[in-house]
Length: 335
Image (tube, rainbow, N blue to C red; front, side):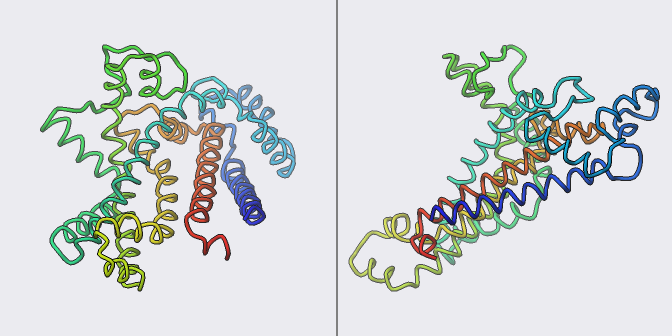
């Protein structure tokens, strides 16, 4: 198992290397002067020349990539044109907000995706199953930004019970910076009122980001569990008089998890992709919002860094899903 895991990690490193090449080609080889695009049409020639020299645009393309990759690996992403700070500092500042949003969305995805899948299996063919399946179709086909607008309309305007922008209300000061995640930092500081206020700000964007994943997980869990209900061991367990709920949650759910875990890992990693528009709509100051602003302002250093960080996060979730599947399923360990 360890050898296969090392091989898988090595393959992911190659994928990350390919992603770095793709990012470099898009940023550096696209038509036009990269330095001029980054600084704008009205920038003086001296500033353009200085940035061109800093980016080593006068060097051969292979040499440019070598220097760029070396800087990326060492954590030197350059200086942001927007914030005038090192991009690494910007990432460390904005990433905890998106991580907090993604963690809560992932927890919602895992918990409700599995529960709804089991309920749909238990009541297969009945009205409960029909409601869950129809809702799942809507959750999958509708984009996240549409649910964001709908959530704001319902929970901020028709029933004004949740805030629609920012991380905390105007009457609160940011908590002492320990993790960068406001809910956790407020709890560590003993400020439960601040933690509740920060949590209210994160409810709507996290639910919106998790909705598609919940729908997908529920459908796949239902499909896998219904297939396993026809297996001989399921009939034997019912013959022994084991309660149905125990059969569903203890004996059927675990062997039905392979496809669900793979899908969940992709959906959780995809949260960082969906967060670009959702953070923008909710005015949430996270890494995805920062990356979107960088794209709109042609901040090539920030764009490269954000895409690489997102790619690394997706690969990490794939590694975790592989490890979980091998732990749950002996067949995967022996294959």
